[in-house]
Length: 435
Image 1 (cartoon, rainbow, N blue to C red):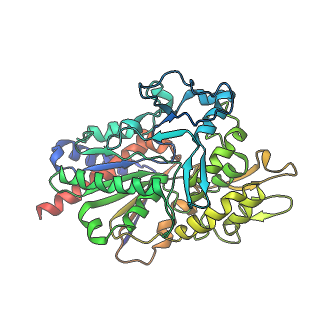
Image 2 (tube, rainbow, N blue to C red):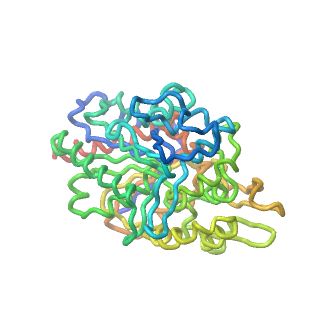
Image 3 (cartoon, helix red, strand yellow):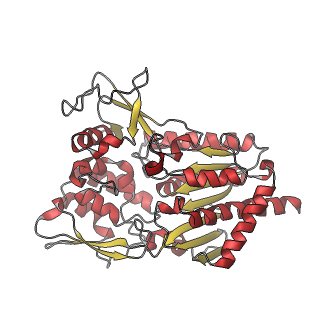
């Protein structure tokens, strides 16, 4: 059974959400289902350490930089404010770059660069990308604060599942060492969170790319396990069908809205990201007749991504895209657990890119359409269209007018909608238990 809800936060809905929040606040934490937050790309801190095999690209990028490190040599790689300065932007990009090994059919870090994800299991690395710059690098802090106000507590009923967002997953038969390890860790965290909360199944709350990981995770585990351990899957701003903006990233680089960053300086690093390939427009949702990139000589749709990668000067991306990513794009089976999708709408979102005679080294002219500013509406509503006639999959879609891709986690009204949905999920569980 599929349910759909569309809302622009009218007074009535606001009142209902306040009632949900008050109800949850008045109940004890023992009535809450444990909740695990899974961030999107760039949504948690990453740490790095340089070994003797590290070869710096410049004197500025030597092993002494940055100076502040732990006694074991670890430092924050993402987010580091020095990325704003051009000489250090190149240094940052070199250290973030992944390499695809055709013989191993998998990705690895740059030589001499070790990385790790701090604070797995906690929300600590999801709150702020730089804890010293809280005002400008806040990510899930507003959402976590609101969850704490209804009774959630970090490490007891509230957990975080950060990951190395540069890496992705691949279709069956292809190795994904880093991505597969994350899925193993996530499964263990779910079981631990459930066990420590009296066996209650968990609520999985994701943002952006995290939604793709969790849907794959659910479908890669047996249905009895899913139904035992997962109460609900709440996906916020999930790019089920990828984004046109990702084609801009690959063609010309994208500064992610960070001022002073030159897109071309980070283009090669962004192209190297395994997960970025996964975010290319999915031909299962974008029509063959829909032009996404137009140049004086060629037009590219979602069915032409391999040709597009070759023509922009990134032929090394063609094999992993065609063999690892494209087959996985069609693997969007309904997992058989209740799902809610919270999406922004009515925000200008890149829909078609026009490049002139100077090629892909210049930023394109952009025609905009509907979406959340990053993800196109056809992608945000991808599951709704894909599972339209399914009877055994509950899907609730909540549209929030004017909510952008990341501000949806910070805007007071948007956060109220999200927390209201979480309160509703807990309330339904409490009602069913009392029957």
